[in-house]
Image (cartoon, rainbow, N blue to C red; front, side):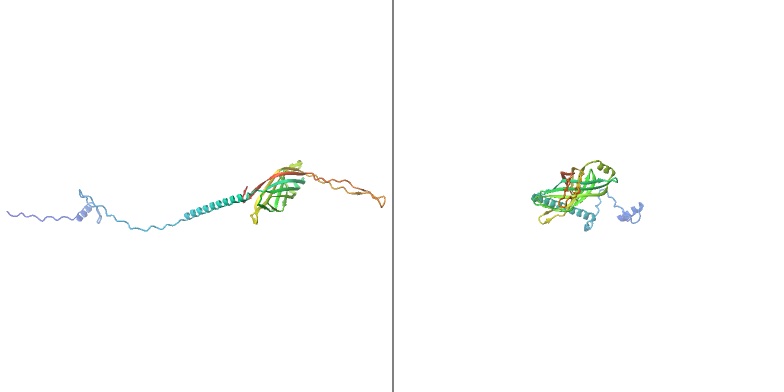
Length: 288
């Protein structure tokens, strides 16, 4: 028997050609990659991992808000420290010197004149005495000029000024002064009240700048106000002028008769009050 002849066997088609043919058949464009065909029973290899290149971290920039917060924090700490140191200094000062406030009292007041005209203007003159006591053993007070304002039944009737002075420690100082008003216009209702009363409820406000002194050290002066009230005064009776001396005609050149009329002086209307006063200290806008 002769050998049977077989035609040439077909060559295996490359995978790339199959993929291209499948892509073209499925409507894919030229050059469009296709996913690898899934062979039954075979798991595709995982994608290759390519690590990203390391980049240096960006530099930190402090914002304006951060600077503001830092400044506020430091400022708060500084203020707290200053307050703490001030409290310690005050405590040491109090333990060493035991400071006490001076006391004031209106010991006498004389309403020498009080005239309310028909045009509701007030003319007055007031004479007063104030006693100041310093109970401290090592602290002296230095007073500037003292301005005094008097009121009768709530109506201002006179102002005056007393020169400043040095108030030594453990000392009692008597201050004498006067206040007056010349044709000061007041409210008509208040003017009528002043006319209708013979005795008036009096009050006085005294303002000054005071500093303390310890040895050679003198502090800065601060504003103080002394409020006195709770006493009354009536218009003082004017002292009658002495009667003129009458000289009779002498019958003879060697003898003469002189008649002197008796005169009396009266200072009625002065009041001994010993009214206590309250001291108020003013620092900037606060009053204690």
